[in-house]
Length: 154
Image (cartoon, rainbow, N blue to C red; front, top):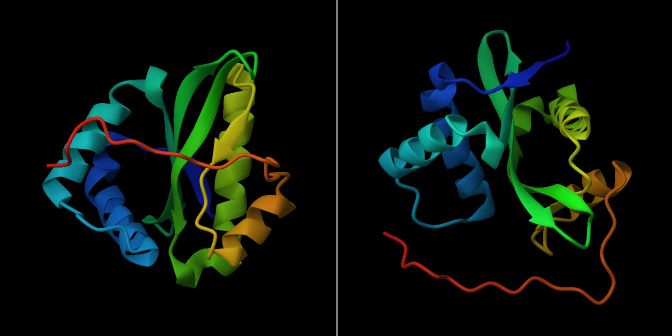
């Protein structure tokens, strides 16, 4: 059975927040606050210039999502995107919903003129690394991720 892939809409917010909770649990990301996540997702969906959120739906139920943010890059020749969050429920991964999400989002971004797609990945998540490599992603030799918080988390 093939999943329906589409842009997220306001009516998906509650289910999308539940998927975010699953993702954060899977990745051991602390501090999930449903009300805060709902506010962030509501704001994000209302501003498509910031990026996009695609969802995978199976039998009327959301089973995954891919959220990308857009940013300008001189190095990459214009607008590029970064995958902020990408998750498919484990029991639905064999349905290739992740591939469908990534392919659909990539095609949509290409049509918008997005020049490059990148992501951050836990070094322990070897299954995800293999997935991304099968889909054309490559490590950037000599580069690592550095991060600095500018605002304290609430």
